[in-house]
Amino acid sequence: ERVGIALVGLGRITVNEMLPALAQCRHAKPVALVTGDRAKGLKIAHQYNIPESAVLDYKDYDRLAQMPDVQGVYLGLPNHMHLEYTVRAARAGKHVLCEKPMANSVAECRQMIDACRKAGRKLMIAYRSQYEPMDRALAGMVREKKLGALKEFVSVNSQNMGDPQHWRLKRALAGGGALPDIGLYCINAARFLSGEEPNEVIGNIWSTPGDARFREVEESCQFILRFPSGFIASCSTSYAAHKSQHFRLNGAQGWAEMNPAYAYRGLKLTVSRVVDGKEQATDIQVEEKNQFALEMDHFAQCIQQDREVHTPGEEGLQDQRIMEAIYESARTRRAVKLTPPGRTRGPE
Ligand code: NAD
Image (tube, rainbow, N blue to C red; front, side):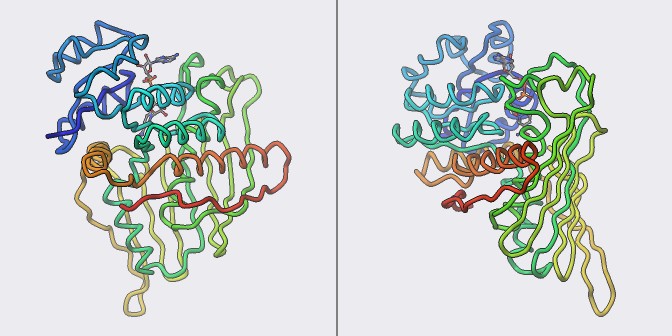
């Protein structure tokens, strides 16, 4: 029997990506919808064979407690709602798969972790790249020392935002600008691929004066993460530059480049090393799979088998600590030290 999921917030990520992915899931199925737009909810419910009685308004969210079919919730909501809808889900006895960024502050992340721990429910953050086969293949190569000792990670994740009224450009809703929304992918990839945690960060933020989009949140952010081994990540993220998503991971004996990286589909990976005395770049072939389906199936299987999730709240918390340190560094114009976290990741 597949695990029943309530999808909360019928925005772009839920409707365009997670709901279609659920059709491919082997361990999860959509059984309820929570939305402020009843007409939209009913239309989607018909499409996915969800009963009309399982389309709830936000104000009826706590009724999930009386819906035993619903074992987990998927939160596709603006960032400032992640805390409240996680805490209420846990109180209603539901496991939580929450979209990234986990929340708008370290303090909020801690409250989410505590609420789920107290309720004995799982909390997983939707770091889809960690479930995506090409990223995992690269992490495997790194662990097998195919690139030698890691030295540099250089990455850009940028896009050009439109509407200045969008919630992503409101500080109270989004928590920040480009950094928490898309720069986060660079942070998480540097940590996931290296398996290391940074002990120092340097950050810079910039907003073009007079640009109506960036009255409240930063337009761009550049940051350096230093890791104990000497591995260094240099990253840039912008909300006002043409869409650009890539990284290069450079080891002592080879490099790997993903371009595009972080995308929903169409990822490309090239690895270059010296073979028989000659530099040889190879495109790595990995069968493309739906990352959203893999992520959701992982969540569902952890519920079914009562296993620890691979990307728990602690993983989101650690990225939030790093982002707060980047902002502090940008504000103070100094490097900011970070203490090591406890374990942030569960088994794969
Ligand atoms: P969206 O704006 O398309 O959808 C947000 C939904 O929340 C809408 O249905 C909206 O009606 C609803 N909502 C409820 N209260 C709201 C309020 N006060 N203000 C605005 N909307 C409100 O956003 P999205 O792109 O689907 O993003 C949702 C979440 O998913 C965000 O946390 C985002 O960071 C995350 N996300 C993750 C990925 C990924 O690849 N993992 C991609 C995109 C978005």
